[in-house]
Length: 561
Image (cartoon, rainbow, N blue to C red):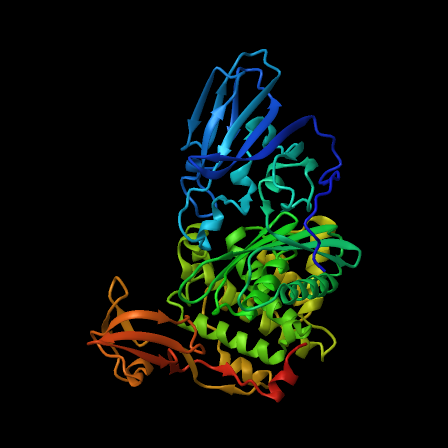
């Protein structure tokens, strides 16, 4: 049941270390206006640096966004002689008397995007009349002295004042708390959080005695709140049961609607004690996509957070690929949203098709580096596909070698336990040592060939060895024509394509379109011919030689779960 619009005052304690902090910083946040538009005014108090120069950290570039300092203004302090904004250095410099004990400083934060809210806009501050949605690294400046290299903890006090009585406040640290006290935190935890307020509807969940909150706003066109709440509750329960870990006392998931005229999209960000999601609110949104999103991102509580990579991008085949595999496995095994093994096979086939169509499908693992991963979509998806298929192979291989007594699940739990008990990180050597204890033959040659060198998997051989039925060819996405730069006309079209067979022709002027980058979704295009607007429908696909699993009962029975 949703909570009603109400305000309660509690004290929140987040104990991340056993140390007692000597540093404390206080914030007061209140609603305001600037140039007639909604804004937030943040007043902060903190210790001054005895040198006479105190530096505040606030990022100008973060999470793919630039010029975040453009959202800041009205820097004010009666105790400071000079305020210098250094965007390139991502800081604010305060000049003051050396004997000053504490500084009171305030600033204004305002949304700098216009028009309908899009998915990408939500990585910037969103501050509107009905609500706000801000990530903490955009909301809270921190004194540089409070974030030393030793990660010494500090305390944070946050007071929300002057907001409407019907506002709900949902953050990474608790729900509907007007006076928050966050004990012994550090920059990495405090600046990896989300803070929302306004017309979000909070749903309180009890997951084996632990508190979880789902905060959602907007009137959704394709689902009711109860559906998503049920998916979240079942997902949290299933994942925590699998990992044998019910240690998280509080967890929040927020969901904010965004706009898209054509197609749909969704995204999520895993944060401290929380997960922030956005999705396009239109009739094209597929609820199964949200089920996937919740399961993938929440899985990162263990693969990526508890189990940390030794060399971040080099082990993305594990932290992203194995997460991808267990996302599908968790959904199918627990029938979340009534999805079953047929869903697992369908989605695994999509992974196969995506890998074998990728322009970087045989790139070595060394090319999955920071630069490529964050700047090139093909490289960013490569470890998802490659790692998920490796996990599928190992799950079947461990089951085969152990005569059904063991599975990849047993290996994953051992890796998690090592991470918890000794801080063991995921390295290639460590992983191979652990997995080989479950196998008859050394898996290193297979690992080196397909994960390190990037050779494509010999899928037909793999499917045959485990007794799966498979199709030698499969449909893959193919629009069948090329657009002009403004995407308003067709430049070239393949005569054997489904688009051509549906009636589209070179030179057609496109006035409206609806399609997804998925061969199983029917595309809709409207072209202007003379005085008529003609509709064309077709599946954007073609058959290629890529082995995929048959979605039949023998294969469902053969799956290793």
